Image (cartoon, rainbow, N blue to C red):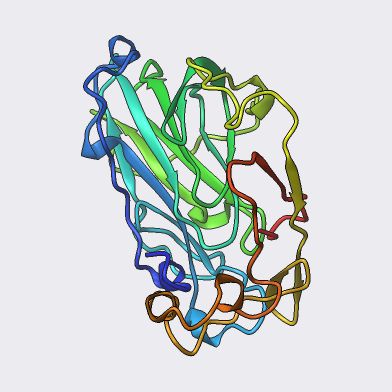
Length: 280
């Protein structure tokens, strides 16, 4: 749910639409509910109690995880069969942190990003941000055993001590024990500029210069976001009712700075400068 911060409190889940004409289906053997991997953050307080940026207490992988200072609770287990190829659908449902995702001893071939098929790119780790989705192909070609699956957040509990930020990648036939593997060999992280869609639809509006350019500078003061200095203020009367009554002009429906008046049949370019990690 993206109503307020409901998803920060746990109202979230994966929704998968399968493509009957998937151009990569010959590259993998398994793609079902067992190959969906969700990453999320968990807080010991409700989002409504947060007055500034919160720091997560636990990373959840498929709903399970351990706190750095907590007990050795159960971890999620991803089961595979040696020799098979799997399409894993990696989904970040986090409220705030990004994660460095990897599986000890296994490379990943990226074939889809945010619903768009891409030319395959092989990496050993992926930095994934809130709301992003990746489909990766992993070949289960390592010796039968248990391997750590890792999702290291950029803030909060930032270690793997005691199984924090981890799940278990288990081959059929392996003992039901925790892994002893390491991730010291990571050397090929995803560089996003290496991603190229199979089909390039082009930029909306064509290649000609835009008629209008709007720069939307996002700032945050005392925990409130603002665009070009204006924070959103919900109207006292629903906007739809105001429009139906015809009593007010469109520019007057919301407080000053919340509405931009644009001419018809023009190409508008929106420029949103990037900020620090944790910014919009």
